[in-house]
Amino acid sequence: MTQHPLSRFDRLLVEFERALETVFVAAPAATQPSPAEHVVDGELDDDARRHAAGLMRVNHVGEVCAQALYFGQAAVARDETLRKQMLDAAAEETEHLAWCGERLGELDSRPSLLNPLWYAGAYAIGAIAGAVGDRLSLGFVVETERQVEAHLGEHLQTLPAGDERSRAIVRRMKDDEAAHAERALAAGARALPAGVPSLMRLASRVMKTVAYRV
Image (cartoon, rainbow, N blue to C red; front, side):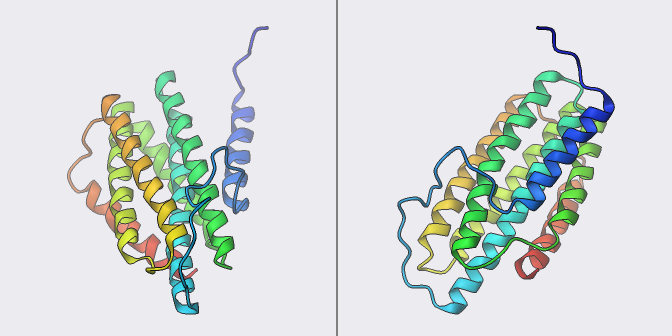
């Protein structure tokens, strides 16, 4: 049976559906078991639980942004292979989103109230990066994943000592983000212009500060 390409309106509906699923489903269905499935926590007092929830909320926002970035880049990708690579990466990030959402529930907390804003901003950034060119879009993936990997490494050090379940999730996420960066490099990523990585770190710092609380 012949498949007809989607119209612009159909593609808009697809993007809208993706946004709704990412932003308004706190813990989407995961296809893989959580890395914390068989991990037992130590003692967590109220302060430790709140701190862990703040960090996991930041990580949940990071996954919301990752979905938006990849979908934005895929929407404007010129090369069909690259588009598929972006969508495959977004699917892997859905697993992370689900795990973080589940963990927030276990910690009696919630995702960021600003998720619609985070998603919209990240989608726009991804679309702009993709529109500049496929190789630069891949370079944006590399830099993004390297920065995410670094902040996940910080979380491994700053999570409460007894929070082994969150730590198991973050450790797996860190490994996956490194793999995303390596795949983008292998696909021909181009280094970003000077100054762009610093701007990305600044934007990330603002997001993490706000998302920890809101």
